[in-house]
Image 1 (cartoon, rainbow, N blue to C red):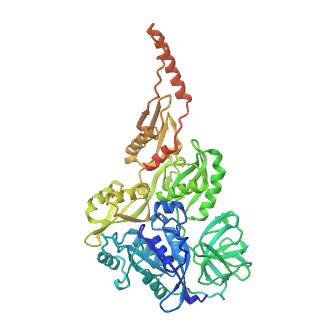
Image 2 (cartoon, rainbow, N blue to C red):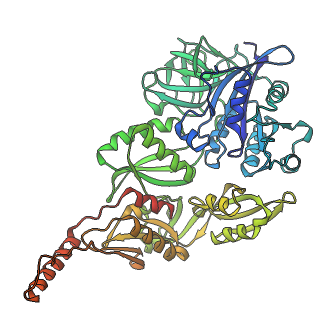
Image 3 (cartoon, rainbow, N blue to C red):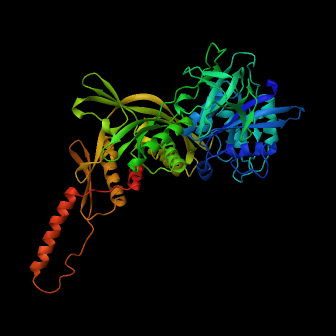
Length: 597
């Protein structure tokens, strides 16, 4: 197809501003999908995405649109996630496009991820088409939202399109703006092949399916290609596009987005951001690729049944293929056996990965308390990066510890300013500034430890602001801290799966809260269970789970009291023996409770 008639663009926005609904309307308007096959959130393939109403994976689709100028354009649309944990998916999509549609909710206005995603697009010099969505809502404030787009985002008011993805209003105007303002892709099919790998998935029969954007040259079935990063060569078996389901085509040429299969069975051989070139006539240089994303949060994932270890290993291998921001390595625990230490971008990321492993691979899992990476400087001059409490060194060998800090931007209605500042300070936040974005909306900027925001911080923001708050953050470096390892002892034995790193000032409160939760979740046994939280040899909190009562003297009636006393004494000795040798079964929900604390 003529390259001048191709447009590659993404839809970007804050979470729940209507990206997937707009994608539905664009496909519906252009008759890209049969009415019988149409459903809401068409590009969200996972049941998990549809249930939660969020996009987790970026999805590509080809749309043919006959514009008012009489020409038929080929539009390659990529729908992206909006949650801060999946910003890597957005950056991958943006690298494969020449322009973006920036969606802003008419009721919510500009939010933290709106700003972050716009900056991502501007860094890549992309054309930005601003759209105010949900203008049909009763509480929509279109004039205020226009002012925010102009003042906060710095975009021109006259370029803003008003739309309702739900009602279909403004759909044609958006399509016209895409073909008019977003430039056609550059590159030439006569040049040596350069094609960017922006995603991949695994199919049992076809192996790894590579999602790619061709920058130069052409890919055809039968040709030999080479990955410029790994140096591996393969024969192309199939090329295709997404229509929206995979559809085989004869070739992919410069400017086009589609998929390639090469019968690759080992998922590790494909690297997101790598460049595909011809094995016979290779390109001289690779494409820029992606900035490496480092996981922020780590936790252990173990199979509930130790026999499922190999199945878990295979599942994680395949899952990482479609999510390169997720990393893992094997580890073992005295309490849980063999498992994996996994790195994630945030708590929602952890939850989604575990849910996918459970649903897609039918695995029952146990996860440990999440942790960040601490830098521990020892007395021998070494620097140790510790993300696992089990690797915490002897306190006597520690000179000092540093933990990661983030600069966090929180946008919310100004009525909640006092409560929000109080929340940030309670999380060891250091105040930077307050910016009044308009008469009703304010932004506060704090610097605080990453460990303080990885669990329930986002939920607290939403709760305090009645759902109107949003946040975005960036790593600003490491700073000295007073961190210690808090051990959880069950009947005087350390349960390493429940140990975690905590600031000393909060150790007692967190230990007490965790023990109370464990007391609720661990069922009573025939013997008394002592729950303790300790730092080193110092016990900072304790809870006891009483034994299940058994009326052993119920069969005794009348007679001498000594008979009852003998039975009580025998029962007491039995309880002692049980406590020494009895095993405490910790249910899965107890680990989840620990994760929430």
